[in-house]
Length: 603
Image (cartoon, rainbow, N blue to C red; front, side, top):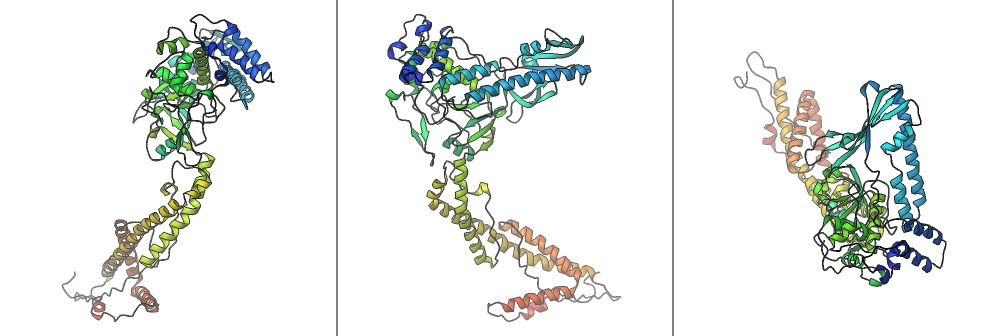
């Protein structure tokens, strides 16, 4: 599987193959001259008969009797399900079948784990990759494997795909589409979602159908810095060389700190050539452009990825490239394949394996060369090992999770350390100066912090210090202005609403005498709350301030004039204690607060 990993040397076997060994004579190659065998022999000579030679010799020997065009088994072959008869559920036979099936699954799981353990530390070793791929192909659940185990228990019998227990039908082996049930019909840009029939009912795992094959709904991909930026800014994930699929390209490496792409350096001696040159070298052609064929482009993505397509995997476990390089150095995304259009799938692990003859035909060759046969086999092993998918693009909505790289986490932590104090200081000073309120500045939400989305490492965050301070002050000031607008509007609305609510509530409590007269209602000066509730913007301030003033005014009126008078007196004392110049009382305004009920004014 190739993505945009830092490209090291090309396959050591490819480097070891001489020009004569690559010559296409058009005649079948004998086992002794098969390029894979010759390559391993050449490698052994270079290593001066080191300790790897024994393992390489064993592999060379095994290749001697194997056709170079032998197909690689797809992952697990055809999957199957199990449907239990309704009348047999939770019966003794059902329980026994569960036990046998669990034992079988554990055997397979142990085989995979053993293969993975042996593969660990040898991810860049071609021999180990082949061995691991073959182990995965063998360590799979199959209907035949289950039938074999049931044959060891006399209580079970199997006729066709019908499993019986003590002569009574118990369950059916379900193949193809019958093994799955549609659980969620397609809607809103999401494809049909299926679950598999199991001994416990429908599976917890979801599946999607792509060109007749059922794939696990979830997939994963290690992303590049440009892809991460696109994701965070709401765009689809697309290959960096999209639109150049027929041109020879070298691919890109990315700066560990800034994420900046740099085209790889051409070096023929080290095998660092464009994908077009690579194809011509291996297929023994002289093409001027790469044929725009999905199968051929998928093959090249698997063996010589240069950023024209996107590779993903259907297993959550970490994987490495054919050179043992990891893919998740800049983060990893989880993908919902139900949200990826079928047209975006160029190839997947349940498609027909690549064929050397097929690929030769796509580049207008009658027969495949030895190197092309070798690379075809390696491509199929890679697809098998990684459960690989090759996609043209990944919609933004299809990305359901992002696992950050440690260097990105370090970048954001250092960015926060500088940004948040600048932001809060600017915010607090602006609010205090405009309103007189001393209130704590909020901590900006993570999504509101303007990180540079394709930068990494703590040191890079420090290098970005000028940008950090500038953005913090600008955004802190802008948010403060929204807060000030809220406070000003809130205070204005609060005072008006308080007076109106107080007067209305006071009149509701007035008792009219027999002559229709009522005592005067005096509306005191509304208090000025020392704190204003949280909020931003003038519109929200008017609404919230009005609601708060109405509530408090009604409560003050119900509490009686003495309570309101004491609040007003305290407010006046607070005003006199300030350093502001004293103003003369506005007597007409004070008298306007009193009102005497006249006969006929109110019934």
